[in-house]
Length: 575
Image (tube, rainbow, N blue to C red; front, side, top):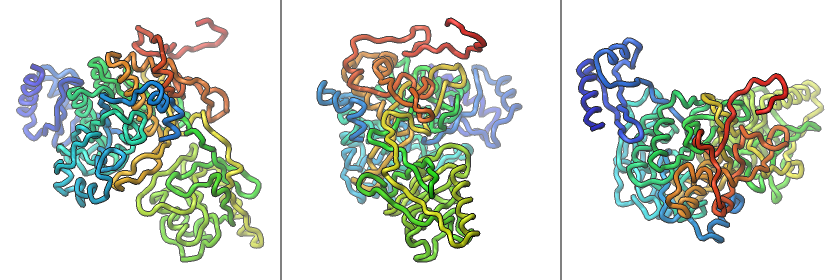
């Protein structure tokens, strides 16, 4: 009946606007029709539709989103859950709504060769091999899937490039890393099955329509858990159609795990669709055994963030140092995006500015000219972060980011030395100066509460920088981080609990995980206990969840948390 009503509505709309294009439809999680108007949609169009077409309740643009192990597995109790309780997620289907999955990777049960990946993806976005299964998919691990977006990057206004096909092969890598974290060879729930739903194109564009249709596919095909390592900062739950879709999926027994966002310690910046009441929004904590690095220039010490794809400064390689230089030393190539003269940076630590090219291009260019380490100065306010890898060979020298303020101070020191002529400041990256950060918030992890209703979001935390499958390599691994990496850790734990309690509702699963979380997580800003608006209930402990003997949640809020909302308090008040 719903489908027929939609078809009737589409027919009436086409009578008014013959050129309108139907992009897709959903019936279960949203009663929705996705349309593209030839010249966009304007307020007067809405008036015409409302006046002449019955049954339309709401006309709204769909949002656009972006793609935000072994030590972690042990740290969060997943290893104990497997060894002590015998649960590994067997029988549980987890849907990964992302850039697709490289089902040819060895960690995900594939052939484990680059040739197999090329056979699945082809040589360019228009190769028919990335639209057909070709006998390589499904696999015993990646058991089902669909492509709701196609291979071409999908921007907000580029929905004419959205194409559907049966092959969810990953062209971006993000989804492969998520899937491996959840249920790969060394994943949190290695017995679980993956349903690969490609809703983000290779360059990270994630149309809201594709995500909604992916959620519907998951519900229709027996999935128990959905992972959404994507979102929109400062998302408002009351005005996001995906929130409605997630809550509908939860009502049908499917729990959605979503990353909180990577916008740092800024009130209300946590995103949608994780702000949905029934979704579990995940913050990022530091990886066990991790350290906060510092870059030292002369006697000044600056907090830094390591590029995880570059060489490490650790217990084995403890010290990198040299004269520090800005760009080519003559105010040229200050962003490091062009090759430097061969040998011109020999033995030097080189600082360049963020922007204009991939972070990895900067490090490689400096390394090839003889530089021993790279410092990238941020070009906006905010904490430094682990910049992305742009492809090509991995650097053999370390790269770090410092803040805008730190970059300004270092640049000033260099300028003073250039005037003095006989003085050259020395930069040093010394492991002995690093500070252990286990059981702490990651600086980039978003802060809540949710903007619409002041609900507690995020609700739980997990380490989010793990060594997982690297797409297209056959069997290699790389670091994958952010709340995008934390959410699948929780999704894997949810699969363990679902295996132990197959009749548990999404709310019960959330309660078991949140009730048993570890509260002793430190703030990254002041070293005290992390605020509830940063970490929610605490850091994930899967073994504790499986040992739980009761549940606690608020029936009125339908959540395992109790939010008092925003209170204006001018004096001591009893709540």
